[in-house]
Length: 128
Image 1 (cartoon, helix red, strand yellow):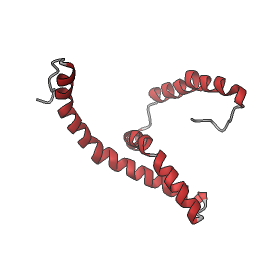
Image 2: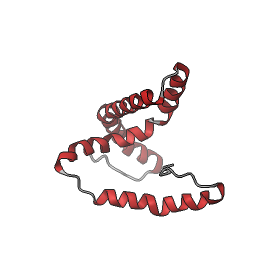
Image 3: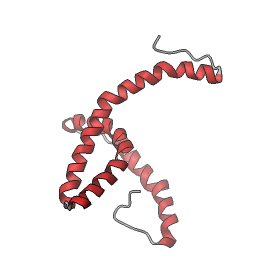
Image 4: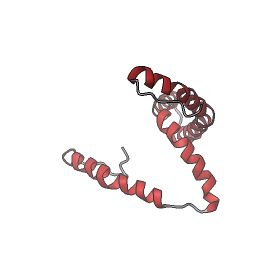
């Protein structure tokens, strides 16, 4: 969880989590939704938006593997963390550009048939 460089005591952990979920996170999302980036930043922000979900999905396991390998090799944090971030961004970009569109096409072509067979809803494929 995002902690904003603050670790609450055990007694206040529930209140802290509630305030973050009820106030801080919605405020961050609403500010982001209202913000129109300058034209110079629009393209990089589009790329960051495209890679954000793949990055969210894949970051956990590679982070632990990289951390473990860095400890075993004795690499300083200042060396392996930036390398990890660059590699994570590159991997996320690859997934967003190559894997995700193919997976979406595959699933969207089969989902209507699956839903009809399981639920009998009569949904038609919109791409036909």
